[in-house]
Length: 396
Ligand SMILES: [Zn+2]
Ligand SMILES: [Zn+2]
Image (cartoon, rainbow, N blue to C red):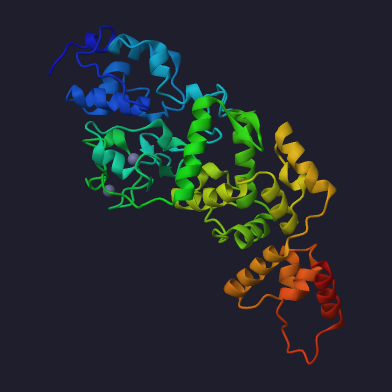
């Protein structure tokens, strides 16, 4: 097709697709370009000029009003429908504000340098691509808490499975083709864990509804997501993160291996999808029966209120209330929890010493003496162990 230059700057475009469900604005523009038999960059340069590279910006994250208006003229769509393809509708519920800067809570950064996407912040579901009549990119794929597809129950990918390139859809011949190796991004995908599918569904539902039930009460989505992000950060960053992961994994299961991250303090949005899956598996375990479980695990790990709310600014009332229990009463892990912690230590360290058990279950001394391993062989039980066993028997 050949058109005069004025068609790109004033008149409606000859091809005007309808936006698809949850479609990203960048995906919509790429599909429009493909429908006009143009390369996306050639198309956007024809409309906006080549001085300001449109794909040199994260237009899903922030689309200037002039860009929105021009797309409205070209497509006949209402401006609010175009804004609806950006992250703008999540402004309040994710507390991401109006700012044009790229770093926002929960939004995965793609770190654009000229037209290049340096970070794998655009995830995809291979099964969505495989079943799409017209492959397209979803807004949900840019969210840090989304690590699995809740429709197909498969794990998200954040790189080409063939060559490990990040997705650069504006440089690909089709939205399901890798720009670098030409490989097909569609496939069956790896099956996701049931826990992650359930938790991700709950997150998505909260974002749709604007509120959720939390600790037995309704809470606004923006407060809920602030609390969830804080719990996730506690598991990743800081001196107590390792203890917290160990205590959580010992009592609730999950993986306590440190997260692969380039800096000591790393926002959760900067973790790659494999690491975020491990992280949100632990987060899901800690959110169950909130706050009792969470408070118990924190007490075991020596994580107190002041550590939890550090750098949080205004502490949501719902979290503050839950953490009161943490300040008032020391947590006594149950007999079963101490036994589980001892088994965990034997599995990962070969031995459950007094010192290590004490670090995990500090306040339950009697149970610690019951389940600990001795580093040297004892000729007769120590006085303290006999006392501990006597207390345990008298409790029955
Ligand atoms: Zn899918
Ligand atoms: Zn590739």
